[in-house]
Picture 1 (cartoon, helix red, strand yellow):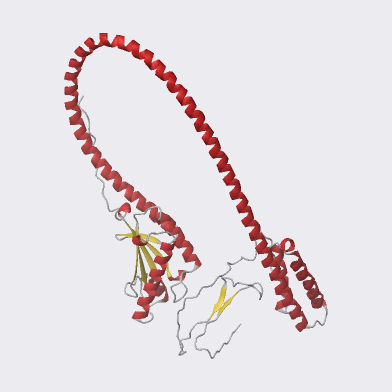
Picture 2 (spheres, helix red, strand yellow):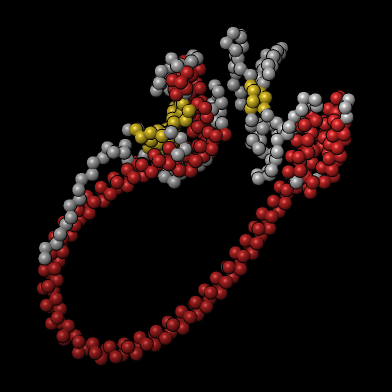
Length: 413
């Protein structure tokens, strides 16, 4: 279909989303149409910050609910089929149980609409009016049902919390009793042990006097042997210390290389990542941003949340966020857009818990292309944000460190 729009307003924007019926309380995130500035117009594009809430695709249908598609008919108005859709959606949300009065009213109205639609010469205007009433009543019932289910869920969580608290208190009481019993048993054992020690001490005192003379002679002989063993041990220890130091150094290098390889594999499962001399470079293409904007799309936030979860496990890692653009537009525009996108990514990472001191954000505009700006494919590659992950904990680039064999110290026999 074709849509022609004109307006006398100085600022204008149009976004069309896909909805199950007209009376939705929040728009969905399924954008099917949005306006753009044609090349032959005198208008321009202005970026503004706006707060909004969207419903995810499928948000009106519970998971696992068998919901057959609505079959349209050119003979009847679209409002009639929206009404059927609204009643089915309300029922799938439990409105027949939690908002029975509103739901039954919607059903009665729908029956009236069905009767009007079945006549050979239906009054189209009246059918549209009744159908719109059905939609509004069904949406009211669905909203009431959702609110009731949210309240039931919250109450269930509160009951579960109280149960956990009671169980924790019972465990604490049991632990206190166990400690008291253990302390009593320990005191009894100490008493019995002290009595046994007293008796043993008396017996040992008698034997000690006879053993002292023999011990003096044995001590002299042991002193001589000890001096010899100390000299040999000092020599062995010096050789072993040298070998251990080399082994520890090489093991640390291997550990850093292994961690770097693991991070490279994990990042690649989320976004394209390559290993460079600067660090691990995670590439975010411009499809993760709204066209010509620096706002992150939901998919971009999801991927950045996963990246943050990995980075938080290694506090010493550093992240440099670098924004880049193609050559379309002025140099100032590209520079500002690259800086805004880089700062937007950095801000989201810090919101996920990544320390601000570990992150930086820079925009390079069109100055660092990785492909030709003469083709659309090349320009798309150049429109990107890169996350450079570095830090002592992951060492240098994989494959650039040569490990030396570790010498093994041996002791003379």
